[in-house]
Length: 77
Ligand SMILES: [Zn+2]
Image (tube, rainbow, N blue to C red; front, top):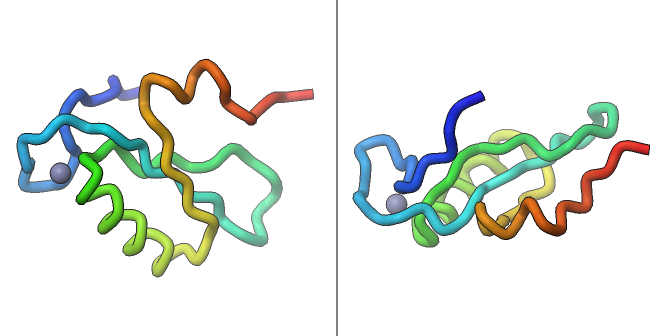
Protein backbone atom coordinates (compact mmCIF):
# COMPACT_ATOMS: atom_id res chain seq x y z
CA UNK A 1 0.00 0.00 0.00
CA UNK A 2 1.35 3.36 -0.87
CA UNK A 3 0.84 6.32 1.34
CA UNK A 4 -1.73 8.87 0.33
CA UNK A 5 0.13 11.70 -1.25
CA UNK A 6 -0.55 15.19 -0.04
CA UNK A 7 0.39 16.58 -3.40
CA UNK A 8 -1.06 16.19 -6.83
CA UNK A 9 0.24 13.01 -8.47
CA UNK A 10 0.47 14.57 -11.90
CA UNK A 11 3.75 13.11 -13.25
CA UNK A 12 5.88 16.24 -13.59
CA UNK A 13 4.53 17.43 -10.25
CA UNK A 14 2.37 20.50 -10.36
CA UNK A 15 2.98 21.40 -6.72
CA UNK A 16 -0.66 21.82 -5.82
CA UNK A 17 -2.25 19.87 -2.97
CA UNK A 18 -4.24 16.80 -3.92
CA UNK A 19 -7.92 17.55 -3.46
CA UNK A 20 -9.59 14.71 -5.29
CA UNK A 21 -9.07 10.99 -5.58
CA UNK A 22 -9.87 9.70 -9.04
CA UNK A 23 -11.41 6.23 -9.10
CA UNK A 24 -12.75 4.14 -11.93
CA UNK A 25 -14.88 1.04 -12.14
CA UNK A 26 -14.31 -1.29 -15.06
CA UNK A 27 -17.45 -2.58 -16.78
CA UNK A 28 -17.77 -6.30 -17.45
CA UNK A 29 -15.54 -7.26 -14.56
CA UNK A 30 -16.87 -9.02 -11.46
CA UNK A 31 -18.16 -6.49 -8.93
CA UNK A 32 -15.25 -4.97 -7.12
CA UNK A 33 -14.42 -1.72 -5.43
CA UNK A 34 -13.47 1.08 -7.75
CA UNK A 35 -9.83 1.15 -8.71
CA UNK A 36 -8.01 4.17 -7.43
CA UNK A 37 -6.12 6.00 -10.11
CA UNK A 38 -4.53 8.56 -7.83
CA UNK A 39 -4.93 11.81 -5.99
CA UNK A 40 -4.77 15.01 -7.92
CA UNK A 41 -5.56 18.67 -7.75
CA UNK A 42 -8.96 19.54 -9.17
CA UNK A 43 -7.71 20.52 -12.60
CA UNK A 44 -5.58 17.44 -13.08
CA UNK A 45 -8.23 15.18 -11.59
CA UNK A 46 -10.53 16.17 -14.43
CA UNK A 47 -7.82 15.60 -17.05
CA UNK A 48 -6.82 12.24 -15.60
CA UNK A 49 -10.45 11.25 -15.20
CA UNK A 50 -11.27 11.91 -18.82
CA UNK A 51 -8.14 10.09 -19.95
CA UNK A 52 -8.83 7.13 -17.70
CA UNK A 53 -12.41 6.86 -18.83
CA UNK A 54 -11.27 6.96 -22.44
CA UNK A 55 -8.95 4.02 -21.79
CA UNK A 56 -11.08 1.88 -19.51
CA UNK A 57 -14.56 3.00 -20.48
CA UNK A 58 -15.67 2.56 -16.91
CA UNK A 59 -17.60 4.67 -14.51
CA UNK A 60 -15.69 7.59 -13.13
CA UNK A 61 -15.70 8.69 -9.54
CA UNK A 62 -14.20 11.59 -7.73
CA UNK A 63 -13.78 11.47 -3.99
CA UNK A 64 -12.33 13.79 -1.42
CA UNK A 65 -9.35 11.85 -0.01
CA UNK A 66 -10.10 12.60 3.63
CA UNK A 67 -13.85 12.35 3.58
CA UNK A 68 -14.14 9.14 1.60
CA UNK A 69 -13.34 7.02 4.64
CA UNK A 70 -16.35 8.14 6.63
CA UNK A 71 -19.01 7.30 4.13
CA UNK A 72 -17.68 4.84 1.63
CA UNK A 73 -20.50 2.93 -0.09
CA UNK A 74 -18.25 -0.11 -0.44
CA UNK A 75 -19.29 -2.68 2.14
CA UNK A 76 -18.64 -6.38 2.17
CA UNK A 77 -21.69 -8.40 3.08
ZN1 LIG B 1 -2.16 18.95 -10.37
